[in-house]
Amino acid sequence: MRMNAVEQKVCTLLLVESNGSDVELFLRTLEQDLPRYEDEQVEIVINATAEGALRRLREQPIHLVITGLRLPDMTGIQLMDRIHDAEHRIPVLVTGCMDTLDGIVEAMRHGAFDYLVKPYERVTAVPRIHRAMRMSEILLSSVPIPQPRQPQPFNDIVCVSPAMRTVTGLIDAVAKVSATALIVGETGTGKELIAKAIHERSDERTGPFQVIDCTMFAEGTVESELFGHVRGAFTGAIADKRGLIESGSQGTVFLDEIGDIPLALQAKLLRVLEEGEVRAVGSTHPKKVHTRFIAATNQDLAEKVQKGEFRKDLYYRLNVMVIRVPALRDRKEDIPVLARYFINKYANDFGKPVPELHPSAVTELIAHPWPGNVRELRNVIERAVMLSQGHQHIDAQVIVSILQGVTKDPWVSGEYLLLPYSQAKEKILEEFNRRYISFKLANNQGNVTRAAVEAGLPRPYFHEIMRRYRRAA
Ligand SMILES: Nc1ncnc2c1ncn2[C@@H]1O[C@H](COP(=O)(O)OP(=O)(O)OP(=O)(O)O)[C@@H](O)[C@H]1O
Image 1 (cartoon, rainbow, N blue to C red):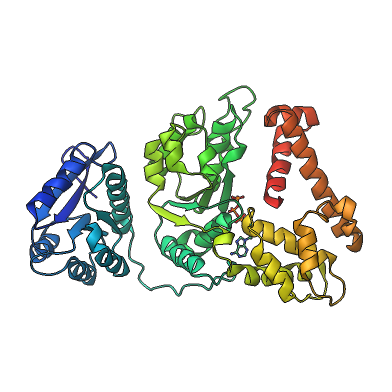
Image 2 (cartoon, rainbow, N blue to C red):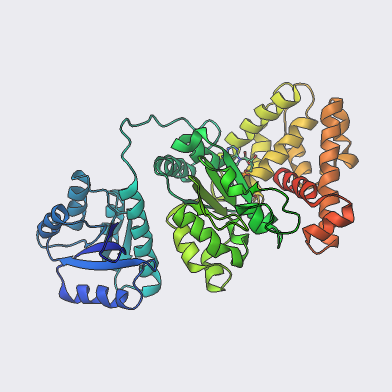
């Protein structure tokens, strides 16, 4: 983005459209609700022909091109190809009517960033243009990588489905630019794994990968946990303390369950994302943090914005690079490969021979809806491996009994008795912690501080057990 005389960011949209009434329609759609940040000025420039647009692109900074599909001198797709060939690092949006849907699909295949269907509806067009503007900012600010890095194979993310291949493609793309990304998907679909994969493929990989679980924030301490505090900021602040965000400096901060971050804190977080600065509680000096932020959610943030539970500006800020992770039931072809991967992993962990997965078991696994997604599949296979003896197959019966919960309780099933002492003890302890923490939280209506008092444990210790329990569940 370039700056104008009063130091405002200027974003210039180039509309390529030869039909006067379509131009008017576009301007009318945007006039009342121009998508922009408060400190940003948006300019719209118009060319009726593709050649005119290409000339303008050579002559002045343009941040986003919005083109019709039918232009007098070439098609919108040909124009887009020329823009890409000339290495203008800007997104192109195509516009068309319902009867040109084939053309829109073709344009997306040629690398269009997004599309708008005429007649434009403000509620859909404005956020899409805003998203493209933010993408433009990222593309223009990212320094070209001198030596294209060989994409690393995805050893950790096991998948064969086309939907997940798209996700792995996006991971590589996001890793190349140091921009905030948002990962959306149901619980257990692998959002944290994906965030880690981005981190490991990015320039930040030598720095820390700091996980911040936004569901764990308790009122009162949250600000100091996130941003840190200085000595004397409040009673008990006996020394300066770094916040969680600063601990992720030079690396990646993963904001898990961002939808749960308290409203009061969202404005402060937005400032951190925009300015790359944190201000510790009690301090007057902001500190720079060089950190990549990746957020994840299993909630519908747009709906939360409508309900007034999530700030619109933070939502726009996050909703630029979005990775949507499909639920396991929508990519059933991944189930057998994931099951075999977990069988190998747990057989290895338990020091057991690797059992075969009988085809009848695969049928049962595929039929299950997996509300807990990959995490649930992992847990089922872990139990199946634990129960397997010698070189026995894992068959349908074992899977069905685990899915029906017959063997769910390790005390009742006695499955821990089959394990070596240390693993058996760990299994039972895990179950104990899970039940104990759940009970204390339920008994105190989810209030962590009161639950910790009732348990007779310091809050940070209780918090840590809770975190571990949630990850293992
Ligand atoms: N494609 C995959 N290949 C291998 N393991 C996977 C895959 N997807 C998920 N897992 C495993 O499933 C478990 C759950 O994944 P993860 O914690 O990343 O999910 P999540 O979406 O972040 O869950 P939540 O929303 O509950 O925090 C982890 O053990 C992870 O390693």
